[in-house]
Structures are given as structure tokens and as C-alpha cells.
Length: 210
Image 1 (tube, rainbow, N blue to C red):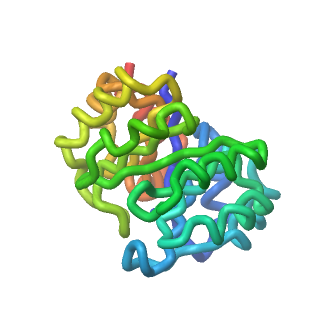
Image 2: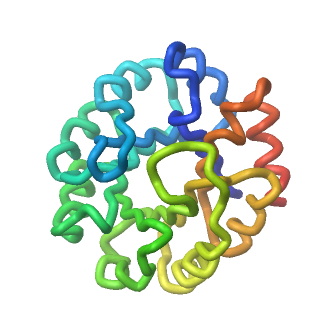
């Protein structure tokens, strides 16, 4: 069954604990960690994750959209991340970083932007637990899903035995397309946090994939 991962980037930052509680029916909680360099936006760091770790039993998914991910891995491990994903475009030593994350006893992921070929990941397919396909250009929430990312998901499904996560512009209208292509986890920001009833929004995404 597909897993739903609400993206905290679309939540109300003034009441994060309440926002996290409102999505307790989800499977994962997605943290978009942005440094203002790899992407223009600056979001939150490990202190926020650590505070929320005490409030939730969801699987914590740390997506590092940062220029130097190796500097931040340990801090997010200590903050309670269950998965840390680094970007292929920002990782000079991708193989090393994936194994560093795994050595801490958590899942290791690698992400690619819409403009990056999935073939770039061939050398590390056996080293990653999760591959995150960005279906929008990273940096801010509320963007539209880019359909040309679907062939990437299909190629990965045929060549990768781990978890495929898709992030960006996911709605009930396109969720099934992503899952049919091979996605296991759908990251949804606006489609969850911009709805008054988050439980119903999560249920609608699940139903759309059936």
C-alpha cells in the first residue's frame, strides 16, 4: 500500500506541534531542510525536528536540500530522523554519504531534481534504501507536478529494488499516475496542509491510488 508523507513545508510554522498532530493518520512526516544556497529558501534545522520528535511517532523523513550535506548528517541523526536523503546534485562523494547515513543505523536516500537524469544514480542503486524523485523544482511549495518525471519513476522501478518516493505537486488527481509508474511513497504538502480536514485529505490521496 502506498505511504503518504505530508510535507511540513506547507504547514503553519507558528503552530508546528498542532500541525504534526493533525496528520497522525499519515505514514511518514517529510522535512524539507533548505539552506538558502542549494535552493533559495531557508527553512528549519535539527532543533525543530528534535522538538517534534517528542510529539510524534511518525517515520521522520529528512530531505536535505543543502549544499554540503555531509556537515548535517549527524545532527539530523541525533534529532531523530529515520531516513536522511541527500541530493545527487549536491553530493561530491555520494557513495560515502549514503554509507555514512547507513552506518548510523537509519535509512539512506538520494534525490534527483527534474533536470537530472535518473541514469546518474546507476552506480549507487545498491547503496541507497530510498530514491526520491523530485516532481517539481525544489525550493518552495505549491508548484504543479511535472509529468516528464514519470518515465524516471518507471525506469527506477525496473532497476531499483528499494523504496521510490515522489515529491512535488502531488494531488488526488495525479497520485495514481505516480503510483502506477512505481512510487511507494507520496510526499504531499499543499494537498494535505492546505485542507481544513487533514485526515480526510490523507484518506483522499490513499483512495485516489486504489
